[in-house]
Amino acid sequence: MKIVTDCAADMTEEELKELGITQAPLYIQFPEGEISSTDITTNTFYDRLEAMRPAIPTTAMPSSGLFAELYRKVARLDKNILSLHISSGLSGTINAARAGGEEARPEANVDFWDTLTLSGGERFQVIAAALAAKAGWRLRAIQEKLSAIRSRTEVVYTLDTLEYLARGGRIGRVKALAGALLHLKPVIRVDTDGKYSTVTTARTIGKSVTATAEHLQNMYANAPLWVTVLHGRFAEKAETLTEELKEKLNVAKLEVMQISPVLGVHTGPGIVGAAAVPVEVMQDLW
Image: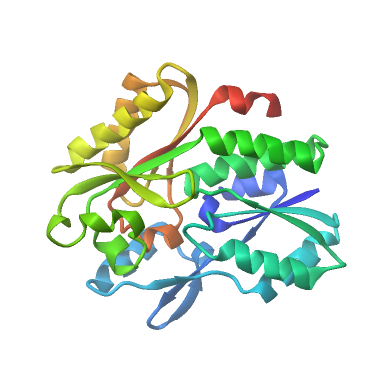
């Protein structure tokens, strides 16, 4: 079985190569033309994003035809494919993937998995699927493992401004914070239905970073965790959050990564947060 995902999973090039994962692009549409999120460096992207203010670019998912072509190519190595994607509550990517899977039959036999999350949370599931597939697990066993990981993963973040979420139309259930409250610093989580909801708000980014760490502490107590700290171009606050998480959580594995530019369109550079999952739910994959 081969694994396919999208670039919202924030997989590194090394991970994609080592685990044999095929990644579908997502696209950023600037006024001067469309570019794949994988074809622009993070710093270049944020420079262009900030230069455009108050306008922002838009994003686009791959077409069903692109997915069909991708699946046919992967099927030359293995006809059986599991395709995992960004939450259906935040993007229509999985719908385009399903349509592409239908187009690719009978050359490819594609099953689909809605991760109901994004970024580091999606990445945990993609890594698990790839490791399980390499170990020869059957589809049902992989899906059961992914379900367990999905239910125990938390993705939570805070923003220096809600400007980008509001202008990109992705504010969802965070919309009550818009308008006069735009200058508050929200702590936002990906809910169980794969959509955003607000945990709390703070008046400074420092307090919202602390609230982010406290939220994870309340969720996991002393359970050993795999934690990925994520940020746009906010390294200073990522370092602050990292130190707070080390103090408040039982961190067994820690990484610090930048999010994909295609996700940064909707958050701006001032995003910092974390994805966390108990080590016990991942440990039988190694």
